Length: 364
Ligand code: HEC
Ligand code: HEC
Image 1: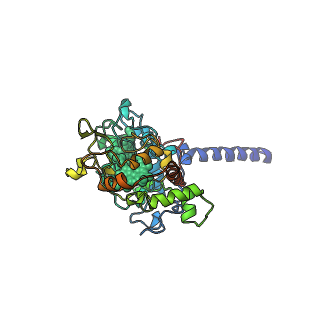
Image 2 (image 1 turned 30 degrees about the vertical axis):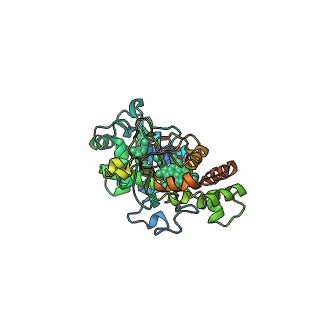
Image 3 (image 1 turned 90 degrees about the vertical axis):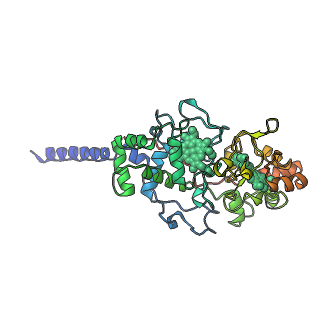
C-alpha cells in the first residue's frame, strides 16, 4: 500500500470512527443533557433555612433531575401513552394550565384546576393538592399515574414494568440512583427533584424589593404593593417569598346558595372537621398572571374579578373564613384605580428560572 492510499484509508477510518462514536450517544441524551443544579433566582431562598437546593437534606442531583425531566414529559407514563404530567402542568402556563379543569386519559375531565408548583421546594408547610392530602412531592407524584381519570394505570407496578421494558431508561436510573433497578420510589423521587428545580424569582417586584432597583416597577405596582400589604390585607394569607401561608381557607368558591352545599368540600375531605368544609389551600401568587382562570375550580376568569370577589367579602356561606367575612365585608372599599394597582402588582410577580420545554427525544 503506498503512502497516499494509507492516508486515505486512515482518514476514512477516522471519519467512520467519529460517526460511530457519535451514534453511541443516543439522541435522547443530547436532547436532555446533565446540567448543574440551578441557583435560586433573586427573591427565593435568601431568607430561608436552606439557601440553595444543594443545601437540602437528600438534595436533588443533576442526574436525578435529568431523569425526572424525561419522566415528567414522558406520555408513556399513562396507560394509553397520551398523557404526561406536562399535559396538565404546562411550562408556558407556569406549570399550571389555562383551562378551569384538567383533561386526562380518554378525554375525561376532572373537577379541579391543575395548580402551579413553582418554588415548592421551599414550601413552608408541605401540603400538596388543593386539599393538602399529600405530604411530599414524592407522594404527590405517585397519585396521577394511578388516577383513573388522569393517567389511568391500574397500579404502580404497571408503570414500573413499562419503564423497565424501555431499555434506554436503565442506564439513567443507574446514573441517578447507583443501580439500574426501577421502582416507583425512584420514579417519583426523580420527578419530584425535577419539580424542585422549577423556581421562579427575579420578577420586577423582586428586582425592586430585593434588588433595590427603584425603576424596576411602575408607580402603579408600588401602589398595589402598599395595598396588598396594607389596607387590602392580602398578606394575611398570601405571605412569604411564595405568597402563601400553607393553610386552608374558605372563600365560598363553589358554594351553591340554593342547595346550601359545596360542589367540592375541599379540606373537609381530609380532616372531616366541619370548620374545613369548603376550605382550600392558599395558592402561591408567583407567576399567577400566566394561568387564568383562577381558584380550585377555575371559576374566576381574571385577576380583576378575583379582587372583586374579595371586595364583596367572598361568597357568603356558613363556613366562610372569618378574615374574609369581617375584614372584607366591612372595610375593603377599593376604587377602580386601586383594583388596577393590585392587579398590576400581581402581574409584577411574573418571574424567571422555571421556564422549560419538552425534551425532543426520550429513552427508547
Ligand atoms: C389530567 C391532568 C393531570 C395530570 C396528568 C397530572 N396532574 Fe398534577 N394536578 C392536576 C390537578 C387537577 C391537581 C389538583 C388536584 C387536587 O387538588 O385534588 C394536580 C396537583 C398537582 C400537584 C400539587 C401542587 C400543589 O401545590 O398542591 C403537583 C406537584 C402535581 N400535580 C404534579 C404532577 C405530576 C408530577 C404529574 C405526573 C406524574 C401530574 N401532576 C400529572 C392535574 C394533573
Ligand atoms: C383568608 C386568606 C386569604 C386572604 C386574606 C386573601 N386570599 Fe387570595 N386566596 C386564598 C385562598 C384560600 C385561595 C384559593 C381559594 C379556592 O380556590 O377556593 C385564594 C386565591 C387567590 C387567587 C387565585 C390564585 C390561583 O392560582 O387560582 C388570587 C389571585 C388571590 N387569591 C389574590 C388575593 C388578593 C389580591 C388578596 C387581597 C385582596 C387576597 N388574595 C386575600 C386565601 C386568601
